[in-house]
Image 1 (cartoon, rainbow, N blue to C red):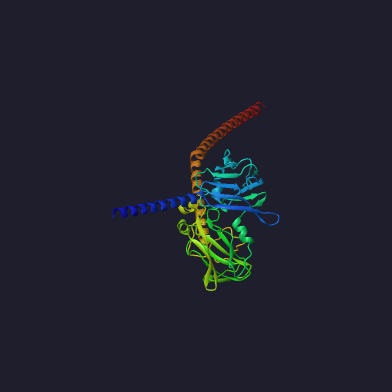
Image 2 (cartoon, rainbow, N blue to C red):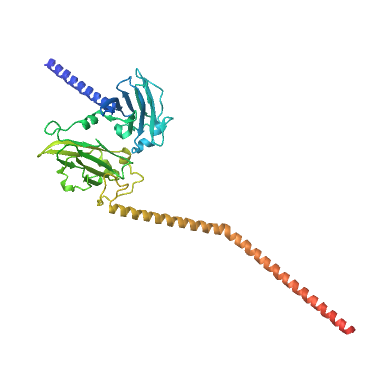
Length: 415
């Protein structure tokens, strides 16, 4: 009996250790980032694998597939839509890795090789076998991001693309075999941050097959002030038809999403999925899930440049997916914001006038009034001086007159 208990305990301990080991391996793999192969299209249009890229929590490692290959130029351009990355670009470091995985001395990303106007670092990559970009800001700029969220990389003046997307674009769709019912999305996830909080995001869904396809769209019910599905000719698909509608061959749709800037609503969007279904008959042949992510600084507190919105209204003006509006707003939202802006400016103007009036009054009391009193005293003294002078002149004239008259009388008597 005791022997059986010992065996059960040993099996339980072993199972626990295996589970713990698997968990640790999963966490380490998740933290290490996902390695993806990238390459470029050559002059013949064939895809050539060039590098592998791993995006971790604190760094990004770009490694040559062929260590002997020499790149005449490698250009790394910042994603200007990533406002947090742009603000902390001065805290990014780089280091070249020589053969034998020997790292060089770290240097600033923003240095002699960095062009501030185009936000691009450009250099040659001949002797080095790898390049490492380090996040020294301590803000986890790379955590949970993919390459497109951070940088655009060009090798020998050609943009790199992932091997998976290149193979998918080159694949000829064959109806009736394999994944014949296929759509292409221009992005695999949606991230809302300070750069697109007002203008939102547009997801392009392309029907690459030569036959009409039936799609279904599921968008989270809350968290958006605008959610629309439009065809390529800008005609809006009514919300009641989102569950099932047809897309013609060689065509597609645009999904326009503008989030509610309220932090509570944004927090509800985190972790939700936009679901696109492809039907074949009455069954769902494919289901594409697009994860929705929200920047952590937007979920914690309201962005300073975001005005409160009225979530009860919906915009009725058409939105062009090819050129999204700079600041899409609902009529109610626009009116409320204009009213609040007018009231704010009225109170600012009133406060300014009050401060100006108080300042002028104080200036008059302490500076102008004493000067006026001094001037009045001087005028009074001048008046008294002029009056005295006038009286003295008058008396002198009277005296001269009397002397002249007396002289005249003497002359007349003497004659």
